[in-house]
Length: 177
Image 1 (cartoon, rainbow, N blue to C red):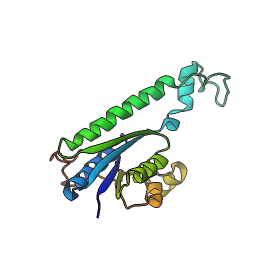
Image 2: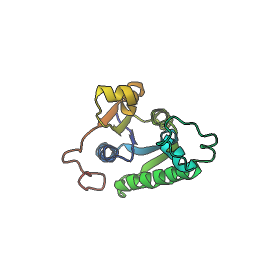
Image 3: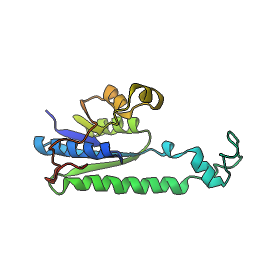
Image 4: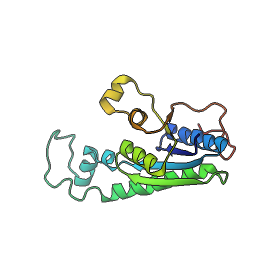
């Protein structure tokens, strides 16, 4: 029996579809719902951010190392990511539109680790999450959060890779684009 559905949402089209599917399942089964959004600070640290922070053009000098270029470079962008993450999570929680109580988890870290930890901590019976449906080469190079969660989760996982047909969200609205 499914009593607790954890919905992992990312700020992507697939993440929004996963929210609609997860909330719909929770409403149909009477399960409790929770949403987790992970602020992945590591993915925000890029050479282009270092370039912007330092004012030094890496395009003009590829491979150059600029001493001190990273010092203090990221407080504003990481704080902004947290605020954006909270805003997005609350927007997704709002999709429950009073029909369904939904617990929220906003965490920082590596998405796979956080999703699995929250699922265990909260006692999820099912995880619903979006997937981009990348090919094998892309998965090899970039990895796949959804594939790793699918393999390592201690409960069933539903992967959403396309817009659900005819599904309404918990508020009775047609599932988003």
